[in-house]
Each structure stands twice: as structure tokens, then as C-alpha cells.
Amino acid sequence: MSSMQSNSSANVSFVRPATFFIKGFVNIPLAKYYYVFLSLVYVVTVLGNSLIMCIIYLARRLHTAKYIAVFHLAFSDLCGSSALIPKLIDVFLFEHQDILYEACLANMFFVFHFMNLQSLTLLVLAYDRLVAICFPLRYHAIVTKPAMFLIIGVIWIFSVTCFSVLVNLVNRLSFCRSNVIDTYYCDFAPIYRLACNDNFVHIMMGKLIFGLLICIPPILIFISYFCIALALLKIAHGADRIKAMKTCTSHLILVAIFYLPILSNNIAALTTFFHPNARIINNSLTQTIPPMLNPIIYTLKSEEVMQSIKELYKRSRLTFIICLNETQLFCVVSILLVLLPL
Image (cartoon, rainbow, N blue to C red):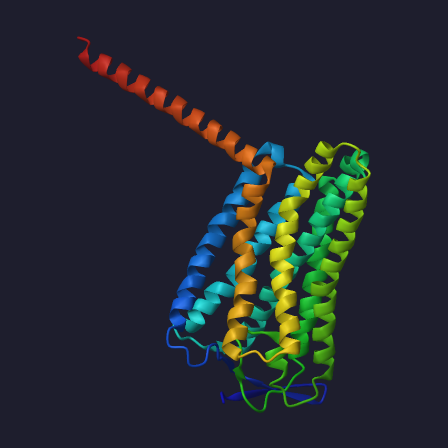
């Protein structure tokens, strides 16, 4: 085990390792190819989410409360993947499996924080659709830009507070046995299981955080869509009903690809035995694939985004033609000035 350092506070001594060792896959000879695959996933994630943020920033028609939330989702996806995948590649592809104690806690905080922001932003988008369909005449009065910025600010404060408490709880543990983390990043549960003092509070806190931030949002989203379904049944014209349903399609797909794998993995882990390698693959794909797919789905399924892309393309093409014509005119004038006798 790595050398231990003791910290004392209020007559209580906590033994902490200088480093943790992240174990990762066990006896998989071609595991490096999987990390190369995750590298490609990260590149697509960065490009896709950067593109959707640029489109929202440049297209004035998308400067609405709803697309503030979409921008925030893309930002959370980008930051969440950046907190997880580059470190994962550094640890396993380049075999830097020892990680400083403080760096491990920082990694835990940022991975959990941005994953939670993704979850809560999907809930915010469900609220947006609920108001838009159930209260269409009051939508622009209720879902305003200041209101959306306020909601996003509140979820940031809530998330930072929750995971600051969670990380601080790890500092209340003593690690006098092993320093080997049996997973692919600094996860909360595998770390508190290494402790040699009482971890009952940590077990309860882990369950509370999971229930509060992973289980409750999809329940609230389901309730919001139940209300939306009731409102759609009251619409007399079928064409109007289909048009309203189309505005929810992209969000429903995002909700499905985010929550279903997470909930399925956790239910399967409770009911059946998972080989550690299978657990790592399932959990890592659950955390990395949705941020890659989100911008693709929003681009292909949202008519507003597609229309904005076309308008931006036409505008950039027109600007290029104007610049090209100006350049050609400048060249012609320059040649005439050279050819004309003094």
C-alpha cells in the first residue's frame, strides 16, 4: 500500500493514502482498443456539443428560454465527458493508474456534478414542454430567459452543495487496508468500502443522493409527460396534436438514452452477479455514449435547429461570395493600375 499520512482534527485522527490505485479491467488482453474507442467517442462528443452550442449562440431564432436549457445540457455533456474520458485514457492507455488522494476526490466531484447537471437539465426541459403544451397562452410569461437562468443557477448551487458534502464525507474516513479502487474512476461507493472505520453515514448518503438525483427526476419527467398526454387528448385536431407531440420527441429520446441504461445497470447489479469487467464496460458506456448522442439527436430531430443550420449556412455562403467578389474586384483594379501607363 502507498505511504499513509495522518490528519488530526478535534482529537480525531484520519489515515489517508497519499495515492489511490485505479484497478480497471482485469485480464483483458485487448483492453487498450476499448480505450481507443472511448477516445473517438470523446472527440465526437466535443465536436457535436461544441457545434450545438455555436449554433445556439449564432442563430438569433434560438435565443429563447428553451435553448438556454439546451445550451446548458450541451455544456454539461461536454464538461462531464471531459471530467471522465481524458483521465480514464491517461490512467489506462498510458498506465498512470496511481492518482493522488486530492486529485481523486476532485475527479469524483466533477464527474458526479456534471452527470447530475445533465439529469436535472433534462428535468428542466420536461418542465419547459409541460408549460408549452399545457399552458400555451401563458408559456412566454412563465418560461422567460431570466426564469431559466434562475432555474439553472439554482440547480448549480444545489448540485455543488450536494457533492461538496459527499466529497467532504470521504475526508472523514480512514484507509488503513488497501488503496486499490476496483473500478475505472474515483467512484464514491468503491472508495468508502475501502475504509476501516464506520461508513454507515456514507452508505445512507450514497443511497440518498442516488434516489434524489437519479430516481426522482425520471419520476417527475414521467408525471410531466402524463399531464402532457392528458392535454394532447383535449386537442381536437389531429394535425395540431401531432405537431405538439413532435416538439417532445427529441427530449423523450434524450431521457430514454440517459436514464434507462443507468437504472437498468443499477437494477441488474442488485439482482444478478456482474463480472467486474462487464460492470466497467456497462457503466462507462452509460456515462459516455449519451453525451455523444445528445447533440446528434437534437440536430436531426429539432426542426428549429435544422432551420437555423440552413440559415447560418446560407449566410456564411453569401458572406463568402461577397468577400470573393470584393477580392476579385480588388485584383482587377490592381491589374489595371499596373497596366495603365503612368
